[in-house]
Image (cartoon, rainbow, N blue to C red; front, side, top):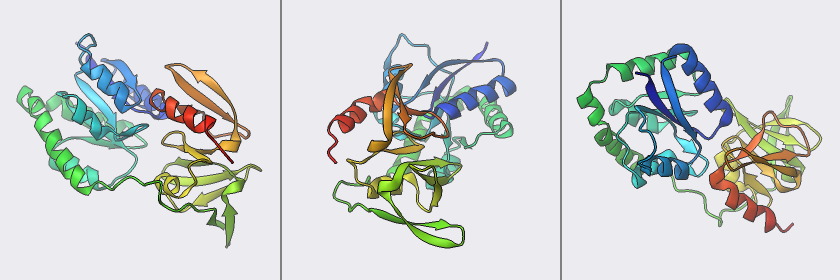
Length: 268
């Protein structure tokens, strides 16, 4: 019998890459669905008409929050292989509770190791997964950092490295911020790229919310850089900017209402 797999991942490129590697190292599997948000995941797992997965690949950071919140809303009985781009405090909890995880970018050997571990689990061990997840969530809650608030001050200028100098970069010149392989860059309207010594989360907290929008885990876009919007499959949106981007900017279904409100209520 093929292993039924559910993928919860909001980054399109990462989901496509995971499925490609799965086809190579575990051809006897069936991907039931690829979900992008907490909302979609809760809806799927709560629907008794949906096929039950044998195994779930779950990204930690989704478009509408941390995937841990899924467990607050629905009971998840299946084993989880977590996916993350950051080797941080949460991973220690995964190890303690024998819950496997994969670091991005995912490679074949790590995926094969995780699937082998899944295959070795006994029925009793699988039934204990919910208890292990709950224990992990308790540890996560103790270390969780509060989300940034609107009262935090915004910044108009960042200091960036350019060749052998440090120069000021005004946010009015930035079309978008992009992260890839844990490296964040700011791209200007003239196409110049500068490395930013901050995460997108830090930038999101310091940028003016009426001018910049966190489109997804990889992009923060400037309002005036938005050229047009295309309707994408799965009730998502695709943003086209006035300059080229390294990959398509997708707004997940869960974040479409927030994006539309931000776009229509913008005041310079």
